[in-house]
Length: 200
Length: 133
Image (cartoon, rainbow over all chains, first blue to last red; front, top):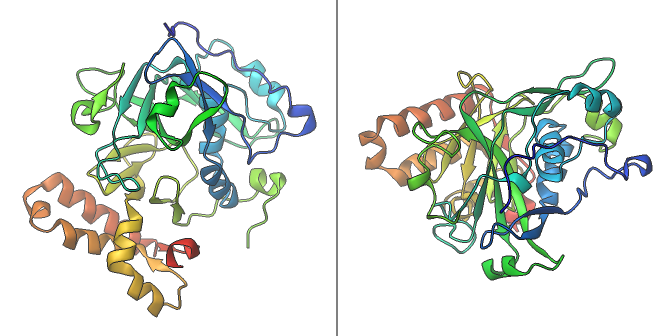
């Protein structure tokens, strides 16, 4: 089983010295929707990154580095950011608490987005953009009563996410803080109606 | 045209504009580069609040391609294929939803709030050449 006890200790990406390209974020490992104990490989939507990059929207890209890739974003002063983490607990998609299928809205040719997956990540702390002399990133508390959800579209077919080689099985389209459910605070609000099926 | 260097990305001010994300087929407008909370209203609309969850700072419109193709493309061409007014998008969806909107107060209030924001900030969507082709 994928445990939820191993909060991420953020590190500096090994490619930082060679200037990591912001637009090509590394491939991410996440638990398979079909077998939580096995990992699959997912790409992060290049389009989402590029478009946010162009309008200088930094927060979602910083969040992708921390909560999807599992590294501190490659920014000046990143050493300071790593030092400042202290005992803050940061979680990634590898530690997802739950995985749902189907988003109950049209997606491509699907009337109900039935192939879209929603990975739920607990989020006590996150990163934000806050420029100061030392660094433009800063750790902060997550919004109260929210969870982080990463939406994944399989490449071609949902069945491809049963391929446990390193082949990329899907794309992480976007990631969002959403209100948590009143009766199950680790899950999104109205999760029973919001998604078609809970996979785990 | 914004420059795309890492330095400009990290140092220049955020540009609050509506953006279409083809991968997820949605248009998003956020007025601040901050931590956001996404509150799903229905299959079309999500309201975006700041981290206090009190202040509305944006909206996400989902399933944009279909609405654009079936209801908005003609007006877009009248604008010389230059932009779509987001207030027009939201008004069009309200028409599609019809009676359901009057019977559901949360939904009705949410659309009203999104339309108000779109009007106040004069939110336009540019850069949708791929859709318009």
